[in-house]
Length: 258
Image (cartoon, rainbow, N blue to C red; front, side, top):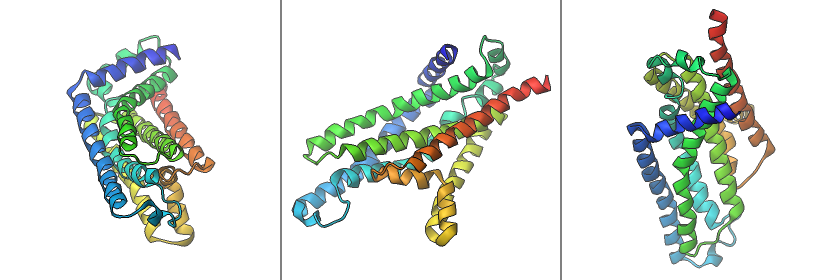
């Protein structure tokens, strides 16, 4: 585990030392701010035009659910575009730069390599989302009621969705010839998962439930509403473990070929 963490720190530092990482940090902060300001401005206009009692009869309505729920729901879609650029560097870049074999000569097990690469992406992903915590102060500053349960569930769901997408992207990076191919395949697969959620919304009955159960976004939606369901958490845990397992097997293929 110690070796994996050393590799994770090295990889996450590489993001900060590259133009790709800097551009992603800038664009991520900009897009996140826009997606937060839209529901915040809408809520502010609503609160100015009507008294709080006007919304008392609306079931499940709360300022936190309206603003942060909308923010997390919309921003979850952005991860479809962000993750391919994060994950393509993990192993596909090592292969294109011909440093992958050098990595295998280090005192690292296959598990250390996979876990270290995964932790490195998560570490950078954490720094990407860290500025969004400032929205809590802005939300409190305008005098809105803070529902910490909704906010905490939203962040938990966003973290689980992000790590799941990263696990899938890491697997694709482990089998891709270069970075751009890895990014394109990862984007296509994530878009396909998003389409499953859309298909579930236009169908009904057992098929709607089937497509929604397969889609990560279908399980993510409850988190944005402040709902914690063990089945949703279990889905994301399995999703992560499944693609990390596939990545580990992909790395071990080199031993079979040897």
